[in-house]
Image 1 (cartoon, one colour):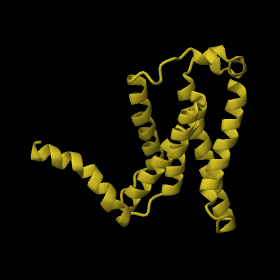
Image 2 (tube, rainbow, N blue to C red):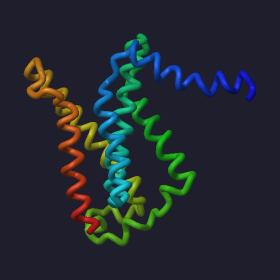
Image 3 (cartoon, helix red, strand yellow):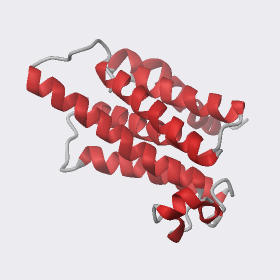
Image 4 (spheres, rainbow, N blue to C red):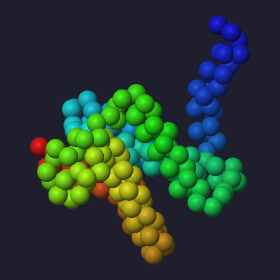
Amino acid sequence: MNKKIFLWASAPIASLIILPKLVSAHCPLCTVAAGAGIGVARWIGFDDSIVGLFLGAFIVSMGLWFNNLLKKRKVNIPSQGFLIVFASFLFTVVPLYLTGIIRNFEIVKSLPELSMLGLGVFGIDKLLLGIIVGILAVGASFSLSEYIKKKNGKVLLPYQGILFMIITILILSEVFLIITI
């Protein structure tokens, strides 16, 4: 193997070993929980809309994690957190679309419950729908946690942010499960 190719290929692995010691991330526990949720949901055979919820949570967690990494390095631009989460969304959804995993934009039309909500009009893939709802829900749960922390001057519960995220995703998973059965 060419030495340059080996160095380029091993750099990301080396950074994973070195950087966590230097950086206090947004919430590694949130990111691991969301990632584990994706794997478990697909393995069990849950509907793609439910898997999408966990993938959306993972996208937000990774985006915020990277945002905090940049802030620690004194990189701060207007709307940086939003832009990074949006970029994470694109870097996740575009490859899923190009590889055919997000493919069926007519599937929601077959769910009368979602069509009644007006979602069938858009003809959106269930995985993509779950991702979008997951991103919005997790963003809202983190915002609620921050609001409570700011209002009280402290968190009310240990691991408040991750608890809000998990409760939100579990409630939405139950709603999607009821709708898709």
